[in-house]
Amino acid sequence: MSESLAPTTPPEPDTPPTTVAGRLDLLHRAGGIAVPVSTGVFAFAIGGLVVLGSGHNPFIAYRDILNGAGLNWLAHPWDVNTAHTAPYNLTQTLLQTTTLILTGLAVAFAFRCGLFNIGGQGQYFMGLFVASWVGTSFVNMTRPVHILLGIGAAALAGAAWAAIAGFLKAAVGAHEVITTIMLNWIAYWIGNYLFQQGGPLQGAANKPLDIPISGDIAGSAKLPVFWGDKDLQGLHIGFFLAIAALIVFWAILNRTTLGYEVRAVGYNPDAAAYGGIKVRTNYVRAMAISGAFAGLAGGLDMLGYLFHVGTSDVQASSIGFLGIAVALLGRSTAVGVGLAALLFGALLFGTTHGLQSNVIDPSLAGHLTELIQGLVVLFVGADLLIIAVWRAGGRLRRRPPDEPVAEPAS
Image 1: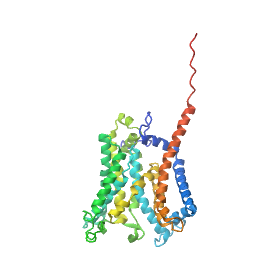
Image 2: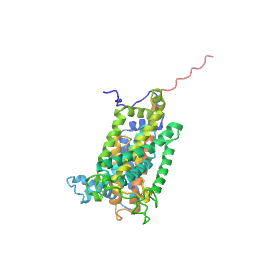
Image 3: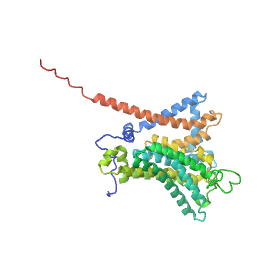
Image 4: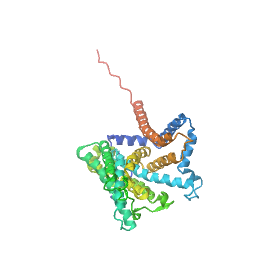
């Protein structure tokens, strides 16, 4: 093994973890795979009770969600004609999954360094905005160069935006939760400014009509579609980039010195500093890498199927926040994030296209994903509390009885 490769086992100093993320990581490993599975089961069970309380059959509702997400395609995978319902629905689910994988990784990577990156939404926005600018500019470029420029610029924009929070954390100790939330709002208002009437990125054809939407990106910047109709949001090659991002995430954390240092800082920054690891440097670069994942998500969405964005899109988007639930349910692991992203991608598309008004109330169908998302976050916190209490009880049971104090001789 070359000297640049890091040990595959996570660093575990003799001292206990001092960060919240370090303690959560210890409890995650104590819970094993049973904890995320039971978390999902409980969340769907409570969601089913809500559906039942509305006077509808939860089993039928969940069946229709699976069908609406196209997962019934697995029963006949030889049918790849997206003119049929199941294959088309599956391509749309995988489009959502692509974005959620990357926004989930944006949260997961920072988490492994002991940081809570709540700013995935803002980092996603910055990637989206920059990709829109690149896509509507440089129209004389060849297609491969234009696509690579758009993707690279989007990832760099997300990285730079997240690095601001990492720098503030390293320089003055500003908590990343506060700074990333503030950066989310700044990105939100930047988007409203860019695409509003008279904004610098409002489409030229939309200005006389007072439509606050950007211009469509050039054909040379659009990602190739490998499954489905390119005019009907076919599944683009960004899906493979998201899968590659999962592999890169795993490789960085488990096969590089950078990953070793990131995990060491996340487990115990004081012990890591004592061992010669630059804690502040790792805060900045961990946030930058996290932001690159989220910025890439925004770039792929813009170049892959959105092609334009408006102020209403900025106001309605919450895909970056859903990445938090993906990372938590996936236990900040590559495989876990991939599976959790597929689950939430199926919920996002399945609840809007699989549930008709005669199944459950449309207003409930539209918010069922948010309900389950909130329950997942709630139960993740609850199962960690249960594991902590169980471990504390075990320590009490193993503690030897106090020796009797000898009475002084009279």
